[in-house]
Length: 76
Image (cartoon, rainbow, N blue to C red; front, side):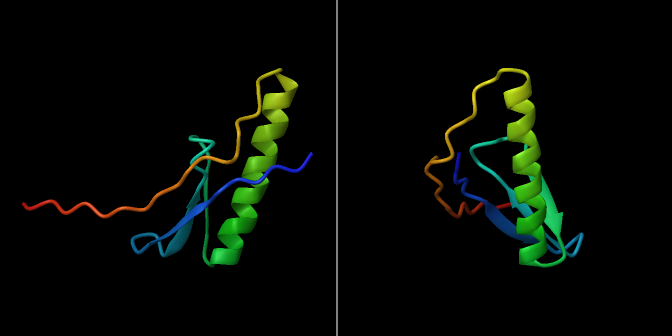
């Protein structure tokens, strides 16, 4: 079975790494010093999560969630 999941990559200046999150799988996040490393790490996290869900009989979430990027300005 092939599933596609959208991944959001952001660069975190404080830790000096890319952070990869998966909107369809809210609890999954990973990181890496390069985009490729972050994507490889989050792919492994997705795979392990899906295997775990299957083991306990939980449904596999749809990977086709709509992802939007927006900017919010807060005046302090």
